[in-house]
Amino acid sequence: MPPGEAPPSRSHRGAIVGIVVVAVLLVGASAVAGFTNRSQPKAWEGTVLAPAPAKPDFTLTDTSGRPYDFQARTKGQLTFLYFGYTHCPDVCPITLATLTGALGSLPGVAATVVFVTTDPARDTPARLRSWLDGYDTHYVGLTGTPAQLAAAQRAAGVTVATANAPSKDGNYTVGHAASVLVYTPDGHEHLTFPFGITQGGWQHDIPKMLSIASWNR
Amino acid sequence: MLAITWWCHTIKSPWSWTPRVYLGVWILIGVLAIGYGLVMRRRARSVGLDRDDRRACVWFALGLLLFWVASDWPLATLGGAYLLSAHVVIYMIYTFGAAPLLLLGIRPWMARRAIDRTHLWGVYRTVSIPWVAAVQINAVLVLTHLPPVVNTLRASQAGSFVLDAAWIVSALVAWLPVVGPFTGDRIKQPLLTCAYLFLAFQLFPMLPGSLITFASTPVYRIYELAPRLGGWTPQDDQQLAGALMAIGCTPVVWGLIFAIFIRESEKSRKAGETPPLPAPKRAEAASGA
Image 1 (cartoon, each protein chain N blue to C red):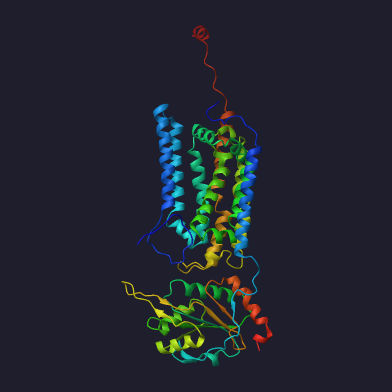
Image 2 (image 1 turned 60 degrees about the vertical axis):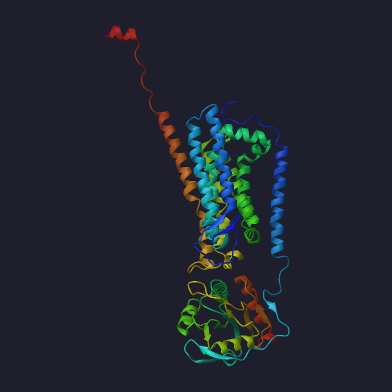
């Protein structure tokens, strides 16, 4: 047999059967993966709250140094409330980026996004403003004393954030509630959105929220 | 502290320049390198290595090097956990770099012995048929880029290994008709080789590449929710990934097509040259003097 040649061909039947079996297994595995990821179309990407809590009543300081009455200033508006901090390595930037992308793709939706810092020591008004402007210059940034911020979180029904022990370089992370609290124009939180909502998820739920008449009175 | 795992997969922590150790990658490369070296050494001791054998060693080493670059930190970490574009770069390196070079490093006597021992002649014969090889690589491309498949497999080390293994195996099969170890099984006509390269490697990936580039929202959840790198948005990353998938293979595919054309035109030119006059016979030469 010449050195660059394979032996004469034999029957392909067994090989074809084997390849078909492998192909079916591959397609089946892909189908199973697809089904386990999304077995049924969801009614909501967010978590429905029943009964729906009322919008919390708190007043903090905005990035211009002026008092911001959350209930009064967002009355009758679709409002997204988020507690986080600008030094957050992952959850906060991802959440705001995803929400910003979704709102940008829904130009007919008028919404107010309010970001309340859980790290007042490092999140000065200037830093807060600069960080939020990276997403949208209309986002509202709020800060306050630790006591005021804790009260706001309790009023919103989320766990009060706590700073973790600093590392050797002095940096520290803050454990905080990662959910986005959404208040429809009727002033109630019918849905809450834990971390992990994709842009597509927001695009699904926001128009749906606005289509429910009783939520938008 | 170094993070040590078997294979790369999705991680939730922000990017760090601290290297990550993927033991499975190092073990696999070590086994392949040592195994290949032992086989070549035995060959060298028994019948000696000819020029083609030595050249094959270089190709195999380069193929293994590219496989390591694509499978280890930092590229594998970026592709497994942070950037869709890095995920596509890994696919490109496997398909257009590592696979053909590894195949070029497999000598016919080596392949014959391996296939003999594993009794896989039937499988080899079938998958090396050009249309089968072309269809399978594009089928694997589509299946392994379905969003539920990527989101599920990349989330675990085992799943990520399955994904990478599917890519490298399908690429090895796809290159058999072009650079396979048995020259008799390669596509013989240059024009058909060029057509195969275009149809198998370039034409079809344009479709998923375009779909990804022009999608209005991020397609893959794991990359959309991954910690960000710099100011890159998931959309920026996705658009780059789609463009790479659609046209990233162009330098390799069209470079090869161009090289084939140059080689064939050189052959034609040499075949068309006037052959030298035969030397005069000695008697004629003596009488003419």
